[in-house]
Image 1 (tube, rainbow over the protein chains, first blue to last red):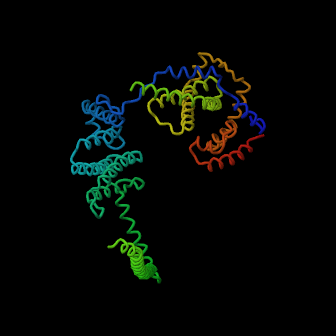
Image 2 (cartoon, one colour; image 1 turned 180 degrees about the vertical axis):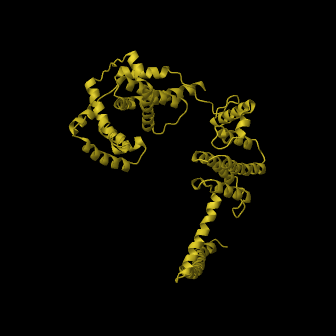
Image 3 (tube, one colour; image 1 turned 120 degrees about the vertical axis):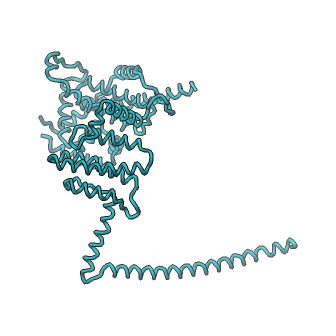
Length: 265
Length: 170
């Protein structure tokens, strides 16, 4: 059902006039005040409660892991592969827990690389025994992507942005999975950029105009000129400074000397 | 110490009541417009202010109260529709369905429903802006402040929304 502009405006005006009655407001306020309000939490957290969500999460993970280990579910999950119902427990609970229980930073990094190698091994196993569909690939990719992100955050790459173990694992992983799920580390990305620029440069060199070289010469010329100008300006400033200083001293002496003489010094 | 707490509690109550006095009608109209049911609108308004009161009591700093209150009401309306969908038609048939008593006449409600249907035919971006402009008679700056967007964007949405609205009229 449609309405015209007049009807629309009239309805809007009618609605604008709708209000709660004073007794309705009073009853609302009364109901609100009667509802028990949880008091403001103390700024100092009680040692007996896990007040933060972070702590609660950790406790939940620890409890879940404990139950899994006790019931043997953890063992089953540890051997699971992407696509298995227990795979989520393996990569989201057991592995982070094991990582959390490793306190030495070097050992942690070794474990992170081991996890990435594990992703490769899982894919290899799947390729041999079953058809790997997109859902399985996605499962594996999410786990591997997290491993790579953790490796990047741990800064275990050398100055050239290379870590042989990581690179080998990433290459092996990419060879086993379809292209949309290829892993790419930030370091690898940054290494790609200069290579691409080099290619562009070589294309330019093939042409008749060495544009880049011309630009460099031009920049050098401007820099030299600017430097000369700057030197001149600096020289002028020091000259002016000297003049000002001399004149100021002279003026001060002129003003002060009669005064000093009158004092008899 | 006890005196400080009492003063703080009184201050909180005063602030809350001034917010309630200023916005309870606005929120009630908004809920009525969204649900076309006076009782539901009443309950949702009460819940909105109850949440605000709780938030204030737990130390939440409400920098933009109008924006904050509208957001609570909006969320409650969404929750209400989610829950309404969960009520099966069979259950309604068994229990019987009685029309709620309302002080807002049924003719008036059907007009509001028609008004809402007309505005709701527009894209999401225009709906609330036009509601605030035409029903609440808010200015551009006020709408921008309530929705947390720029006044320029509100202006554009009002103008475009008006054009689209005219296309929907008979």
